[in-house]
Length: 266
Ligand SMILES: Nc1nc2c(ncn2[C@@H]2O[C@H](COP(=O)(O)OP(=O)(O)O)[C@@H](O)[C@H]2O)c(=O)[nH]1
Ligand SMILES: [Mg+2]
Image 1 (cartoon, rainbow, N blue to C red):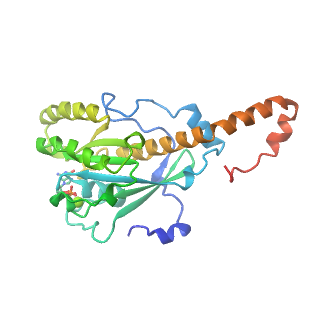
Image 2 (cartoon, rainbow, N blue to C red):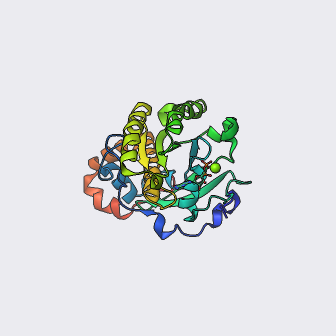
Image 3 (tube, rainbow, N blue to C red):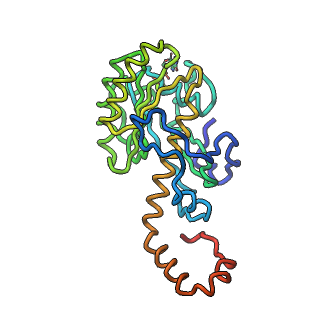
């Protein structure tokens, strides 16, 4: 069962295996949204001091696109239900799956949208694309045509979104069906396509589960970081003003830090 929006107020605690305490690594340094090894100090400190504004209440929209039968639904099912079942009809009557994470102690949710097979007719509704923060473009590593179609999927997704506010992942699925030599060949092309799209590249298998959790942890973390950095930028002026105030009253520093206010109004 996926969560309904109406049950949001009575959510159980975040699952233990959705807790992110370290920055998840990229798949390939040649095609990554960034290649840092650790969370930046700015991000860590903001989380420690609970200066995260509205980020802890955010639900970030993630859409999954790509040719029919490349393995989009299986990928979502592997992560959300830890199941691999090609007959599982997760998309009937359900628009999206909710996945709740905790990043550096801050709650953060992804809304993972899967199509109900409309990609067969190339008529995906604009509401599917609209408001996405992350676009996952999927191809099958054993099917070169599906890789060559990924650019068109990106163009379609971008029609409804602001390109400066979006993170793109290019994901090769069904790695279990490919020999190392075959895989190496398509990887070269896929990395090139990723670079052109400014996307982060991943390869995985929903059948074996290889890299699936790592991939979604990366998606969640990069979406979280982007939200938090935007939030910090917004409140940046006020924070600098606060620091100036504290410095000019430095003899009151201890007294004021003891009476630290909760950050509910930021
Ligand atoms: N061997 C293998 N088969 C897969 C994998 N992922 C999906 N498939 C198969 O590919 C077919 C299409 O998968 P599906 O998720 O329905 O594709 P979608 O149309 O993109 O949602 C099904 O028969 C799946 O069993 C994978 O990682 N490995
Ligand atoms: Mg599907």
